[in-house]
Image 1: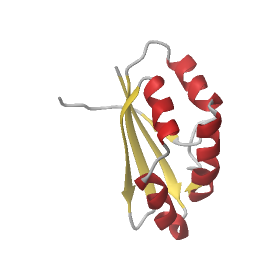
Image 2: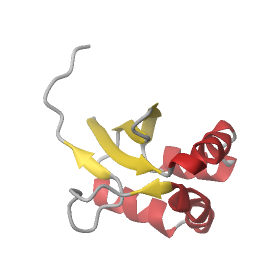
Image 3: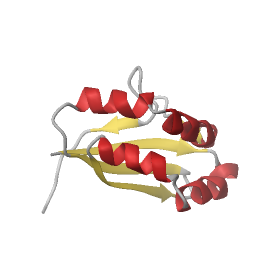
Length: 109
């Protein structure tokens, strides 16, 4: 299992919209994440900075293939058209990243 942490900014005027979207995530989007071996996915909001911190666990064996499956899903792509206008990618993110991935430096079970 891999633990994943990531950050992104949130447009302050779109916080309510983003919360509303995530109060009722589309079932097909959730099913696609589950099929791609993503579990325990949680998003936290830090205000007043308007930062999102995402955490999830990957329980599969082919991370790249599972991420391609998520990206290829038409319903997930449509979901992103609602979420992405709310988000502000961090300037320090790596090339090709939307959410900036974070290094796991400590974990306690």
